[in-house]
Amino acid sequence: MTERLSDISARIDGIRQLGAVVNAMRGIAAARAQQARSQLAAVDSYSATIALAIGRTLALVSTARPANAGRSTRLAVVLFCAEQGFAGAFSERVLDAVSADLSVSELFLVGTRGRAVAAEKGVIAGWNSPMPSNSLGVPRLADRISEALYTRIASGEIDRLDAVFGQWQPGHGIHIERRRLFPLDMSGFRGPNDDNTPLLNLPLETLLIELTADYMHAQLCNTALHAFAAENEARMEAMASARSQIERQLSALQATQRTVRQEEITAEIIELAAGETAIRSGYA
Image (cartoon, rainbow, N blue to C red; front, side, top):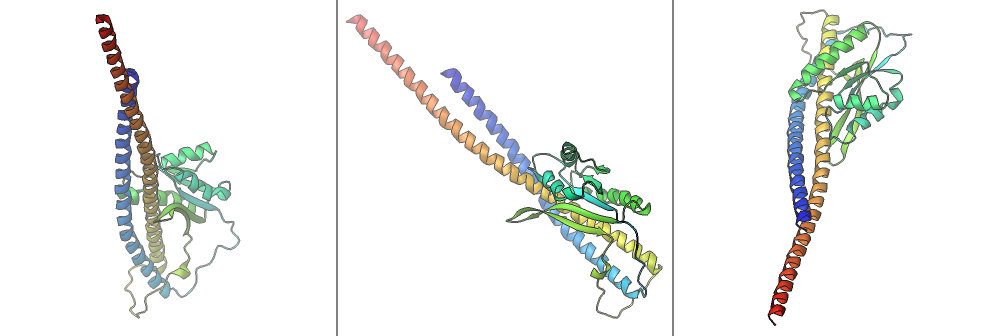
């Protein structure tokens, strides 16, 4: 009986330690998600500024740029999957969202855990990169993605780019979003309503190319930050579920511990009473 009680106590201690680890992971995930969300505001503001500059520049362009008529479209997809585990089916959902394009697209896959999940499904990406451990590393990640993309765009390997990423929606969980990054839809850029003509130091063509490159970099940062926050929100949800399971197991084990301890006390009382009875009978 004592052996059984010590086993139960050891299991309770082990589950409490596991609960401490789960709480720590949940706290870290919450801090990372909050940091990414706060940085999104700055990225969106920068993106809006670049979009306004593109609108001003387009207003000065008198002739439309020739379209790539007759060229076959080669699609590239940037997938933002999970970097670490304990995020539920986060990576699986991102991969499932592009299942129809896997065989006909150039894949750029971000996330170490997502790469492992993709390999299990037989999906091999042409380019891989880990997601930074801190959201402050997102601009550098966007630099690496841009460099790889521009190399392929310049060589004519791809002429269309989509980003697929998770976006956390409060009250609704994670939504997988798909966003076109290249080529840009220039009709969506509106210039200001004033008549102030900007002072230009670059040819319009060069300026437009550089502005669109900056805008795409900002959009890559935006999608990466959304994916970073969504992964950590998914991890928080998984840890909350694990915490609930731990509390249920802990409650059940504590109830068993009380029952076993009561049984042990009862057995000792019976043994003492039996001994006392035997002693009195010997004196009788």
